[in-house]
Length: 116
Length: 107
Image (cartoon, rainbow over all chains, first blue to last red; front, side, top):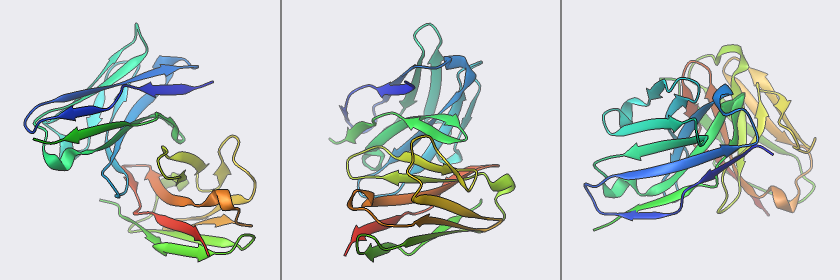
């Protein structure tokens, strides 16, 4: 079955970076883009951007431009999202999702906690 | 930027009742690129409806979507206890934005 499996929880200090992975299986990896969405504690869903698994083309939400980098590794069917210069308000669950008609499926989420 | 406004914020209903959730866009959503998601506590969101009215694979037929342009509705025909969740609408046309969510709880 189509599945996205994300890396485990992270605890980071302010000013550092985090890199979250999202490994895809059950479909042709290069046929779909991947979206990243985050959710702060008790809050709604916030889109961060998109990457084509075919050619690595990216489109980042304006809020994250300059701080986020999304990459792909077609040899392992894995997408990565790196967020730099972390602040306390970056504490959130980060999700990857396959970009189809809507987002489906979603990864299980990765909790990133930013704390000194 | 296109803004999606969901109402009500919270919906309290008894099992078996009909739930009607609204999603209003600040401008027309192109080609009905409107989706609905269900998120249960501690879980990732799950796609329910895409293209405004098409049910995703495995979604029970008590869930239905309707609407076009700027006004969209998610209906749960007969509320089940397992439907307790937050529901989000999303447009995935020219840009990708989410509504603020509607929490459905059992009365």
